[in-house]
Image 1: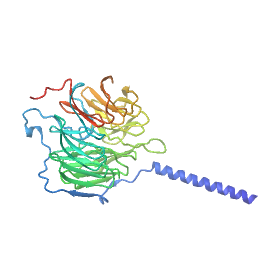
Image 2: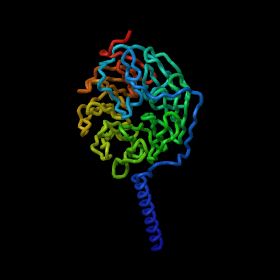
Image 3: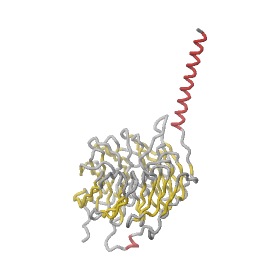
Image 4: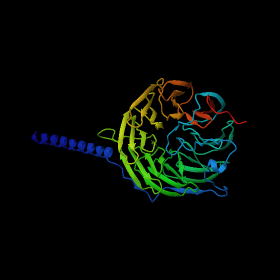
Length: 426
């Protein structure tokens, strides 16, 4: 009997030790930061270059072109600029008033179009990249591609650079859709590219942030963050920053790929946060949203967490930044305006219970947002009062130029004149 008791006790001790060891291993896996650093081996990366595509030109300025009428500013990247601010606060179009044209795309536009020189560029969910005449909505060209696409194309001079879940980033000629180059990487690429100084930047789900020659696709540098990247990188000056599913934000020197800082944000004592949302920046601070609904503001120079604000239980939206405020929604169906300096709530608006997945858009004194129950609203930035509504939409609401709104309402692309839009040129 005594021997039996000793065996039982020994068995219990073994089970306890196994359980403790398992808990220790789980704790280590949850709290240990993944390895990160420059990646020079580039395993699984290949580049294809097309021939006879004609000259590739860089962007030109208004002064260089001297058009007969004012040229509309481009909306060349997701977020409107490399900072991903999702705002044009100085444009005063007013509420959408008159539909100029409406075009069914036959597929989902999860991310909004980009715009330059009178043309819109759209990447469709299940494959397909289109150039659309912004004046009348007519198709200029279409290239069938392997999807899914969950990103906005990047406009750079005569090129259109498009990322895809098939692990590729492809440059097309804007005039006819001819392929110029294609880079393939091991992970999916949901990150919307941005181009600065002839270098295109994007992240991939295998954890690398890439800098490639925008004219050829050749890799200039790559940095392994150690965490899955779905986000689009935010660029300000010589700093490029990206968020990861590992709960980290990395900021690098965009010219060399040298790490400036990295910060891991804790969810609780046992685990880190997880970031799908892209970071946005006003230069002084960097903002992003964890999937748990936590908005986090970092010092852009040091990476120190300045403040956090807890929203609803789930969030994926990149904060829109304008005039010292953030505008951000979550799955609890609320859109909030937060003070950029300290995260204080300026207003908090419930929008009918629909889940808000995508970023808001600030245009002048209005902020636009869509929810997954097929609704799109415009609210006053001052107090959150709803001033316009359309019973369509679900993802990112769209973009604005100096004269028009271009709203991406799931499968429908709609051009609007605003109540204060400038007169059309004759």
